[in-house]
Image (cartoon, rainbow, N blue to C red; front, top):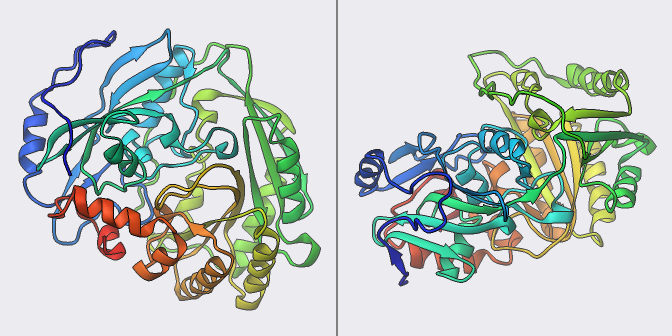
Length: 435
């Protein structure tokens, strides 16, 4: 596969700083002569930045903002910058990244590699929809600029390419103008899962961000009882210092404190604590953009063994029947669900990304044999109702299931083989997918 190459960064649009590579790039390119896995924040659940037999390169030192067009709303930054740091800068300048992950330490490159979705996928798409240009390095091809107009094949496969196409050096993003730095939040309590979906659809046109918390440990008409969160950016600015985000997700060796009994208590306590807050409230955008930040205690309760998550997207037509099957499976398997959440999706499918039309459901369980058996049964429901999973959240799915789940799998594999035939970029995830 041939690409239009570049030998240096384009300097024509830089209004923020010059595109000059520091010496660390020379060290990086030298290291990339051997098979390598690329690591951003290392916060995916699927061993995307882990390779059992090869070197792993941490990209978080590559975190400069390279240019910022405040008039037209675009920014170019190195791929190792955290979205929290980038978000702080943009809010201060009246702009926002429309699609954000739940945790601020996730890197720009990681968001692109998994084509992440935020809390408003149904309205503004996935992260890749807002990427305008990428600069990618591969030891066989050198530095390559790609976009929807230049080297489009490389551009399209790199978005959601999980780091298999080369190392993303930098990216240019299209931004969304904001007239305030306050997030307006409204919560609605729901009787069950099915009412939650109805409420979300009724409010999807009014609010920018729509998502839910649901209790899947209740039965009958109360299954999925929970809270719908409706959010939008307000039109007022308030003086607020940006947050200097720190990674609070690192764990020391600790026991798991969650079992059938404590999970039931936790899931009943969460809505009680939410009732102590006003149903309509405000949060500054710095912190409000990242709902997981400040709630890391949830992850620490799992201890060193950790947890597993299953996230699946079903079409609107398949959702009612598929969700009932999942409800029955949970009761049959007697597996406690530590967290369940739903989001609305809209758009086209894209290779092996979590994208398309429908309802997206995420479920967490304790990392044990019961949870793994439950996920195996979920695979059957996913295939039966033509759902697709989120590969960034799954550390167990094998090639055959992934291939059957994604209609774009064969095209993805073929494209990756052409771009990286020598497998210069490897990971346990790539080995598990056999691409």
